[in-house]
Amino acid sequence: MERRRNPLGAAVGNVTERIAVIISDFAMYLFKIILFAVNRIILFFIQILRIVSGTVSIAMIHLKKVMANLIPKRSATGLNQQLIYAGVEMTAEEVVSITLVYSVVVAVVAYLVSIILEAPLVISLIAVFAAICSVWALPFVLLSILTTNRTNAVEDTLPDVLAMVAQNMKAGMTSYNALWSAARPEFGPLAVEIQDVAKATLTGIPLTDAMIAMTNHVKSVKLPRSIRLIVQGMKSGGDLPAVLQAITMDMRRESGLKKQMAAETNGHAIFILFAIMIGSPLLFAVSYQFIMIFSGMMAKLNVVDLAKKAPQSMIQISPLAVTPEFFQFYALGILLLSGFFGAIMIGIIRTGDPVSGVSSIPAFVVIPLIIFYVMKTVLAMFFSNIITF
Image 1 (cartoon, rainbow, N blue to C red):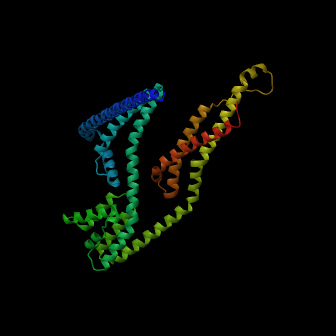
Image 2 (spheres, rainbow, N blue to C red; image 1 turned 90 degrees about the vertical axis):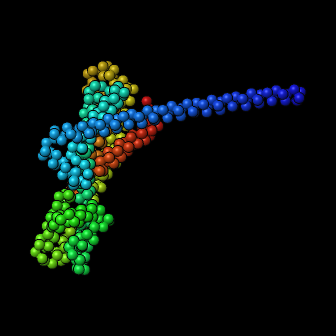
C-alpha cells in the first residue's frame, strides 16, 4: 500500500509545484504590467508638464512686451520699488505676466475639479473666482512677507554693523575701509547692501551718495536715519565714531523696549491662541454632537406625527431648524475666518504689523480643523456607546 501511495504523492507534489510556479509567473507578469502602466502615466504627466511649461515660457515672452504697455507707469514704479524692498530680482512686467498665466491655469484646474466632483454651476463659478483672486493676491502677500523679513534682518544687524564701523574708525581706518570691513556674511542683507555701496564707490560715485542710495533698497525707518547722521558727520568733520556709538546705544535700547512689550503681550496672544486652536474646535464639536443626538431622537419619535395628533397642546413640538450638515458647514466657515483673523491679530499684538501674522495663517487654519474632526470622531464614538436609537 505504501509503494502505491508514493507515486500519487509525488504526482500531487509536482502539480502543486507547477501551480505555484504558474501563480508566481502570473503575479510577476501582472506586477510588470502595473509597473509599465504607472511608468507610462508618470511619463504622460511629465510630458504634459513640459508642454505647459513650454507654453508658459512662450506666453511669458510675449506677455512681458504687452504688459509693459498695459501696466500704468505709476503702478509699475510702485511694484518695482516693492520688489526692490523684498530683494527680488524681477521686474513688474515679469511678475504681472507670471501671475496672469498662472491665474488662468489655476482657474481652469479649479473648473475641471468642480466638474469632476459634479458641483453645481454656482459652486464652480465661485471656485474659479476664488482661485483667480488667490493667485493674484499671493504675489503681494509674499512680497509683503519678504519685505518685512528683510527689513527686520537689516534693523536687527544694524547696531552691530555701526558698532563695528565705529571701532574700525577708532583703530585708524578711513570711512570707506571701516564700512567695507563691516560687510560680513553673517550680517545678511545689510552686508550685501554695504558691498553694493563699496562697488558703487569704485565706479566713481561719492561714498555719501552711494550710502544715501542704499536707503532706497530697504523699507526701514532706522536705516535712513542712521545713514543721514553718518553723512552729516562725514561732511561736518565731527567725531563720527562717537555718533555711531550713540546711535548704536539708542537702537539697542529701543530693541530692548520692543522685546519687553512683546513679553508683556504674550498673555493676550496665548489667550487668543487657545481660543482659536482648542476652545472653538472643542465647542463646535460638542455642539455638532448634540445636534446629531437630538436630530436622531426627533427622527425616532416622529415629531411631525406627534404634532399632528396634539394640535391644541400648549407645548408645540417641531423638528430642529438646524441640521447637522448645515452646522458642520457653519463651523468650518467660522473656524477658517477665526483662524485667518486670529493670526493677523496676533501679528498686530506682538509686532504692531499685521503682515507679520500672515505666515502663521496656515497653522491657525489647519490645526483647528484637525482638532474639530478629531474631537467630533471621539465624541461620536463616546456617545454611540451610551445613547442608541
